[in-house]
Length: 321
Image (cartoon, rainbow, N blue to C red; front, side, top):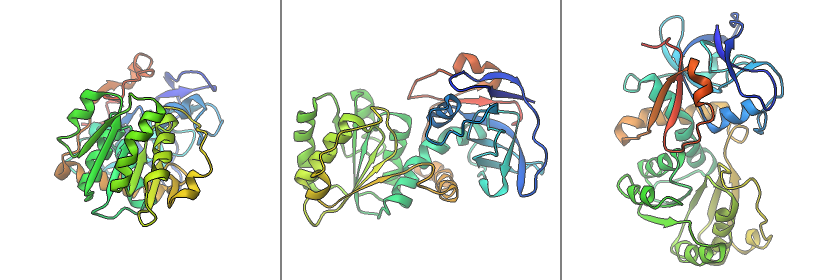
């Protein structure tokens, strides 16, 4: 079969022949139709994601949409190595497959799953979010952040606050649910002053897709302005702005702040799949939208390095209908 084959750390995947998976007890062979190019998929292929195994060669891709031999459409996550999702077939534990609703096509399902479940799992699994709470999305102008705004509102957030560097996208987020938008163009001290009154009004959950300077500013402002009775759950999801921050220890002593992470490992596969199903079911009634670009897997080399945050590249195999 054809697949996006990774032969060594640091090398780009190549569209090449790869062995077909053989049947294995407790597993399904999925005829893959679509698999999205996510940050996680790219990081694993490069060998620098925290969940990388270091074993080569393998087919890239951690999730996708396809069909079982009986024709059932499924979304799958975490295929058994070395068989990744960016291939004509994937070997997937049966418990890692969930049915897809007829209201969602394969390309959209593959595109929306990881960015959508990132906030769904962070809110419901890690933050134990309750309807009526206030949610701040740090880094709301990317694909995952935009969905996070919509999902928080859909799940019953009383107020949603969005931050980001793109003022046009921030302004557009008001329609799908952002009650307040804050641009991230100021220096750290100015950002802290901007964030303080926001936390003084009350923020229950922060979904952080950026880390780096803005996360540090948020945490320092929260420590200064959050009251003893207003506990904050800060959920770290992505690190687009930097992998590390220098955080004063007093921040975690001065206010009731709980610092959490959400991702592969801190959320079980079952939890991630439950979150994905929640997103799939909510997509139509909540009007969840994601811009996609479907391209043949054979065009892998032309699109692998696509860094656009506003469009989700989805590789297709021709297996779908």
